[in-house]
Amino acid sequence: MKIYFNANNKATLQALEQCGVKNVLLSHRYSYANIKRFRPKFESIFMVAGNKGNAEKYHEFLKNKREYYDYATQFDVFYNMDETLKYLNKERQEGIDWTLPVLQENYLNHLSRLRPKPDSYVCLGEIHGKIETEDQIRKLPMNIKYHGLAKGKYINRRFFESLDTSAWISAAMSKKGEVWNAGGTTTSVFFGNRGRGMIPILRHMCEVYKDNFEKINVNTDDVIDGEYYALLKAPFAFLYMPMLKHYGYYNDNFIN
Image (cartoon, rainbow, N blue to C red):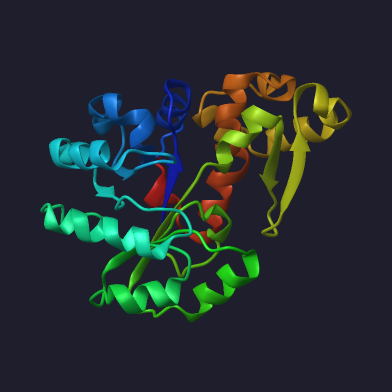
């Protein structure tokens, strides 16, 4: 499974590059002007229109910058199957036949109207309600490949061909993160002032994943102190590297 890590500014992209991440998701709204710089830095680039995007500008970008990305979603409308289908039809009429359809509102109904061929690559968008989302995923046909848009919590589900997540950025923003445990669970930790009572535990956890921190060139004292740039990279040492090794996805997502 490929994990596409969301990034939309210089700091996050540098962090991903320095951590040896292979796959990155970019929003057209924030990254269209810089995508040429990103092409040689990552193995696979996945484009989305982004929230409150402009359909005409996105379609123009898709046609003019085709060589700089590997996958792109159609222009879609959250929770609106009918409007999303209209945009897909418009793209096909304009000759944009490579965008990935995005299922919205009701996956099964949307698929019945879309009628994709076996082995097609389709993205799962938004459904109202966690229970309904889970139920719909369980009922999806297995002769299609699926990308989970913002479905990072499903990394342990081999159902997906790929998915993307922005959760890795939360450590730097909220000073809170997750550490992978050998048994397949995670432990919540805090950094900086929020984590003053956890310093001994944090030091132990940094020692457990010492090799990972050396690999991404992060000083563990900066992690404990809650330094922003250290916390942008720490989730890879603490969580994603060991977790993806556990599930057998490491080589699909990291250079070394």
